[in-house]
Image (cartoon, rainbow, N blue to C red; front, side):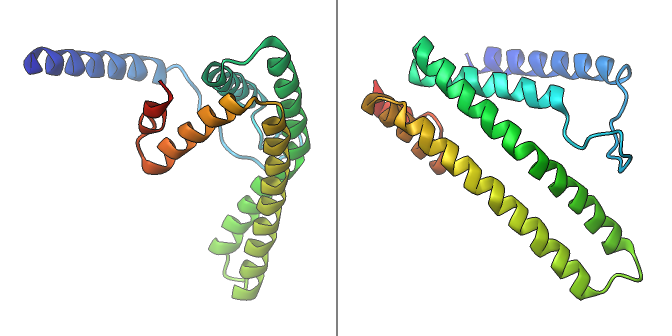
Length: 167
């Protein structure tokens, strides 16, 4: 039995690698740019990730249509509010990289830039917490227990562990 599982795993890995290599030659790399017309935030990726994580979360909590709509609106609001901050963080991080390679930037200037980035990240974290608390209010007691169990599983490094007591 172990041999057949091993063969399946190897075959799957080889197939996925071949497909990835095949598609890799057709894609173009995306480089960060400071050009004013280009954004550091990839809106298509943002939209795809939002859809993916919403679907997984809604499936986890078995959300009804009203919850899906309300929570989706909250997440949209959070994304729109944090987008300028994320853009600014990426711009400042790019500036920081330039400063690190520069002979003229002082340690003090670099430290100040790092502090500025830290403050921006904390602002995003505060906005995320506000959104999480608003979402929490829209969940039933049972749904909150499911989310808590999942979170405990992730914290332990074994996501399935958190769901074992939920069945």
